[in-house]
Image (cartoon, rainbow, N blue to C red):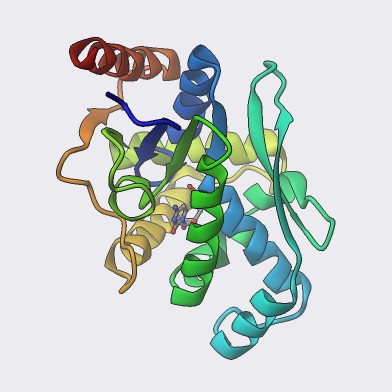
Amino acid sequence: MISSPVVIAIDGPSASGKSSVSRLVAEALNFRHVDTGSMYRAFTWKVLESGIDPKNRQQVMDLIRKVRLECDFIENEQGGLRLRTRLDGTDPGAVLRSPKIEAHVSQIAAIPEVREWLVQRQRDLAAQGDLVMEGRDIGTIVFPETIFKFYLDANPKIRAQRRARDQNEAGFAKAVQVESVESAIAERDHKDSTRMVSPLKVADDAIRIDTSLHTPQDTADIVLKHIRSHYLARK
Ligand code: DC
């Protein structure tokens, strides 16, 4: 028997294709989609917006106590349900993908109190029903008991090209160069995988998929095939 609610955990480094694949998988299964990176990004936005130095752990902890964090679900353009995170009533929106947030989010995500607070919220979301949750520690820390764990990765050059294209399309900066994105990604990977709490790592029982040469739909199909065969095997 597969316990309910069902959580599909999709982890991996930035620009590994997690977001598009998670969205497609959630839509195919009619599950809600939770991008946990957007929760860390939203709180980073609030820290910067409040004039707090991200290195000042005490002030960041004080902000956790004061801020009103609301997580709910809204329809995406394809009609699926995606997480919306509001802080003191504001959804920061597209700015979450800006280079400024990119530059500080790893630092904020390394603070144990921030992780404890957001991980608890992430677990609460599953109490409301089935979901696809993407992040860095979903299969290892947030939902270690789920049987559906995937770890996506891709070659660093391809990840940098994807991220540069996304940033250029979003129009945050003029002509972002792939080389500078590649070094920013490498720096963030290093911080995310060497931090003391919940570092990015592959769960022992995760299915690894290299997305370098796949479209998001190809990868989503692989994930869905595994999920369906697991379901059938356990019926
Ligand atoms: O997936 P992303 O690039 O939007 O994640 C933004 C940052 O948040 C990234 O530096 C790592 C961190 N993060 C994390 O520590 N744990 C998660 N579950 C999700 C993201």
